[in-house]
Image (tube, rainbow, N blue to C red; front, side, top):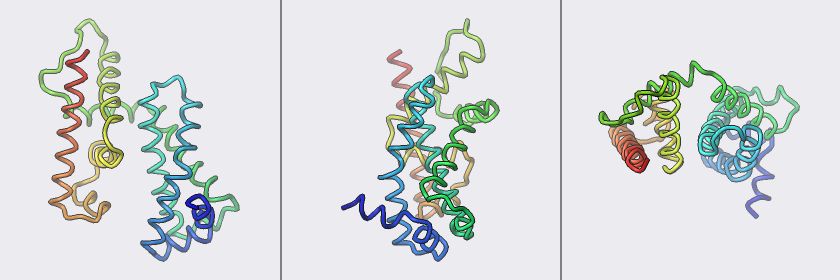
Length: 206
């Protein structure tokens, strides 16, 4: 029943109408269908295509890329650009997601910037083998955070991505979540605190 309903909603006409006219109920249903019907397929494709990456890293990157792809599709639909393509909604969405994921995985400069922003998640007492190269240390830190993030709920990962990877302000995040700035600030703090705890636990177990 769920699949049939999604098939009825996930077409150019329905998606364009929902996002362009700001139909919140219909938009929520469509986004839910994106995640229930298309996300598993995209994750499967990403894991096969980029199997040389650690599984938890590619899963986190693919999840984030899918969310970014949905946001980009919503923006395109709101600007009435979907009708300019004869492709299906699924094809357009996957095109966005693939390009975003490729950027996540291959842009070394972006990876370096992410690591700088992720520094606050490490306790001041974190130690690494001084015989390691700077590249190895950076990779180890990145992998620690990726593994910790993989253990967190998707909603918490999304907040961390917005705040510390994309650099969105607390006000912007509050707007995206439709909550007050104070509530957004508290959620960001709790997410950061939980991530630090997970990273510390991994370092103690290593």
